[in-house]
Image (cartoon, rainbow, N blue to C red):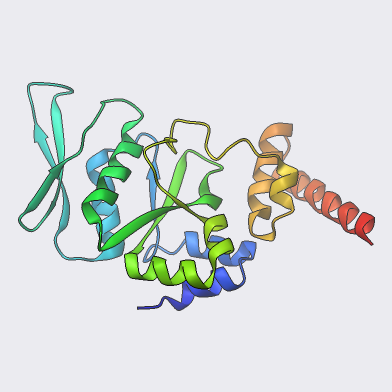
Amino acid sequence: MADSVIESVLDDPSEERVWALLRDETRVFWVGWRQSDGTIIDACEAVLRTGNLVGEYVESEQDGGYRIFIRAGDRRSEIPLSYSLRDRHITMCALNSFLSPDYEIRLCLASTIGDTLAFIPLSSTQWRDLEKRFPETLSRLFYVLTETPNVFTDRFPPPITWQELANDPSSKLAAIKLYQTQHGVGMSAAKQAIDAYLAASLSRES
């Protein structure tokens, strides 16, 4: 089934539409870098609403003192935890593998400016349809999770400048926040700097 909200964002990926989507709790869930891994499954289920997807926490005398399983009905799979900060990514990949081939979770790239990341789960059919209709925009907004890089602990996405972000209308807010962090200024001053940069760029082009 097509999702008109996501399609409208891909058709016009303005800053306002992208961030409105990221704030939509019916389509997107967020994961913090220190979040309990079992709650990640529950957060995903809150969006997918399958009716049977749960995270199962089991105490253990080995490893880190506990094990976490993904369960859906009679199916059950253990997350191969490392008991380190790398586990958020490990859990996301394990969850994706468990949901395949019916569903897939992708990272919302606009959220990678902080240590809490946004993810969007859709049916595999929906992703394939969107890839055909919006190939370039889709890859620019939503990242396919792989074993490496670890999106929570590795340098991800590759280092990018605030200028590069500012040149993409859908990433203007990310550019402002990055400028703010790098220059130690407030949001208003950072926005003025970005607007001045864009105005100068437009002037040079004309």
